[in-house]
Length: 492
Image (cartoon, rainbow, N blue to C red; front, side):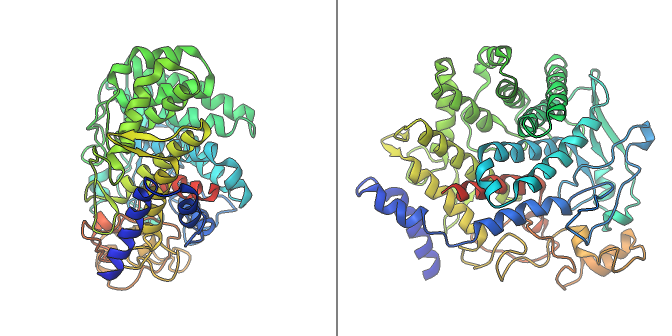
């Protein structure tokens, strides 16, 4: 208990201290002394995506316990849907969260290019982005068709087998003009726009193709509006589609410079809501942060987005009069129990980016009621969330697999929990996987390096159990947001 009180006190002390003492001393002590190897954390967080790959693996694949899988995806409709990412510990490909993953990775590559390049990880990050963006391009088979899911989620969840052995139905789901799904199409547009900027100076032809298809997807999303429910009960829309349309339009404006996307945003600014989470379902805070930077850059008509972005900051910061998200006893943001670290990583990513905006435009901070939070304070709180994930917590373990000496060993992940096809080439069937590996009390035979798991409960406690998927399962979008969060710490 003493450890917990000390850890919490240090975080809260820094956040509040600058109201009464000089910032420079506190900033030097808290931001310039790193307890963890953030370079190693970033490299492993990016490496994770190679373990999630579907399709024909490249010759320079570094995660060697994986093999080729799902090579016939798309065959029932005579389309090529090989590649992409399995979204979590299962063997289904969901385009909506995959596109969100690509958006976050691309944003990180743009914000922290110099820092990531300095530790020789930019090439790996670009490959991770391209693996996802290539799949989105293939899934968008016509101007009014986007394949949004490969694999029957219910059937898949009844089996425990390696992707390489997979024999469950690879059902195809798609959205069309007659059966729209605006959220998925708009997120795909956002992802391709962001990715087009990443590759603009690297592969101009590819960048041009990404931007062209992004514009087409946005038109599809906007002209054929309808909320996405095709993959329920696994990824359903709860926040409707206005957030994705604003998010996509903001990225398209950023990528193309075309004023019609700025006009679109301004015409629909009434959609913008003050929120307290940023997630695969709710993109308002992301769009608001992008547009707030444009506001500070001189586009005064975007003041609502700046105000809403700052409301997001105020909803998270300890000591704010308008705080909405509770924390665990040791200071971890706690939005909800299901894979809570997805909200922690996405929130910390946005806090770092907003503090960067404050620094860039020499702004004093964010006013939350009577309390002003400076950029160093916001960074320090975001850093505390990253450090908690890397081991500064009562369990004294990293919630990133392979980081440090203590981390989860029973990750809820089919491929990681069954011996590699290279070590055990005989097929492991659906039921055999459950009886022999899912229920095993042994550590996973394959270390899924860099995986961020769902994290502890509301009381800072974590059971390392494969069956506890809410806390032990990794997801691509959780890792993508962590890449953005830890990259920010290289900058400090």
